[in-house]
Length: 98
Image 1: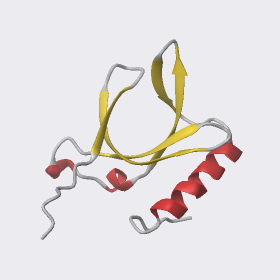
Image 2: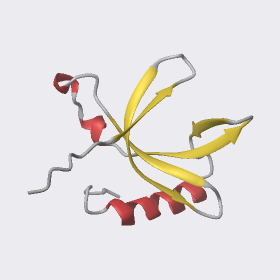
Image 3: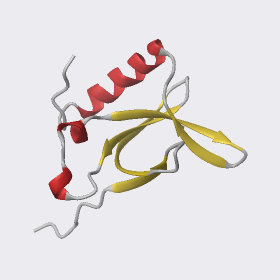
Image 4: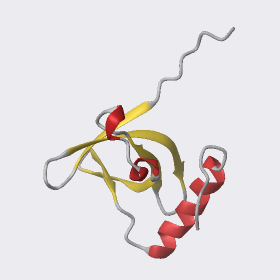
């Protein structure tokens, strides 16, 4: 019997309005364009789960003055390239829709 418990990587992100959002980090990849993370929103409580809580969030990791920031990917081509890479890696966990 395996006694190892699954312990998710929890990430807290504060948006421009100062509101904190909690995510589970599912995966991270590095390409020649940069580093990226795939996050899954965690509901505030089990009774507040919505369909949007299954939405995979992909953000770019940026560093500035020793601080790490997670930023939206502005370039469509870059987003599609990174999104496809995460889809391949996470296909067993998610049923991706086009």
